[in-house]
Image (cartoon, rainbow, N blue to C red; front, side, top):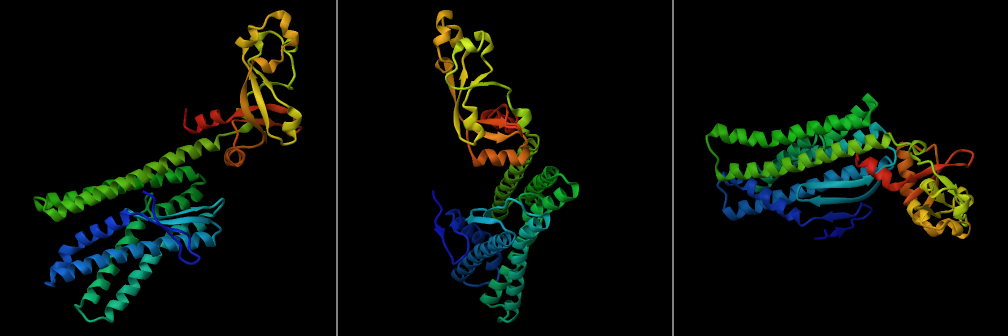
Length: 371
């Protein structure tokens, strides 16, 4: 189901998942027993519980908006803010951001919740003690503090984990190692999220309906945290492989011949597996050209008397469009260049314009997948 998208002023597009309503209802159910102890009418308690659930969604929105605004301040492009079953997230891209900028973006969300908690506490002090308004503000303040503290936990995918990831990456001069460390911390936190309510149930000698609901909710949250940490580990592995990419080393050395070449000019059919048919002059000028790879078996089937008149392209299969790239490209620069000009193959050129070989996109993809 597509999430509705809203635009609010100059803020990024806001995507609201239907799961947000589920979050409101679950929070209301979890809050109801504690709120009902005051002896208020059940209807009033339900309204209060739902109101607190709605305010928590607003708190998540403020949290994510803070991320978005600080990310923009550091030059990032914010695609959207999403409210989901699990809270929310801010989708943004930044080509280059300092460790300090990354830390400030990560901490902006919890800081916004801390500010909301302070404002709610101050407003509660001005309200009549014991009134529904005072209870609403006090509980909302406590929940914002809990939201801030939870997000500050030093493991991915929490904000505290992202801040620690940036700091460790800069300190260790190894961003991938920083990601791995904080992702494993995040996995440990996911386990603890389940073990804590389970320990409370065992200590109490049994589970009531509320404690079982809390345990189920904790397991769902832990699953989300574990998946987020696992995605971070997978991303670190891919980033580590990207760092090893080198266009010059990956280029397959091929004998490049111009279109119109006949088989008799190329030698025995058994030696034609490394022949590429391509207009090099066009490739050197940056023009995308179509390349063809000779099939040695098809070339061998051509009778000797016909080889002087048979174009090599007649026994070749299309390799697809070929884009020229410099042999000096490595790591992220190589990937960015390939993404900017997608093609099945790339002609790797040395500084003097000579062709070093051909780099296949399929080979790079296989390397990134660890194959």
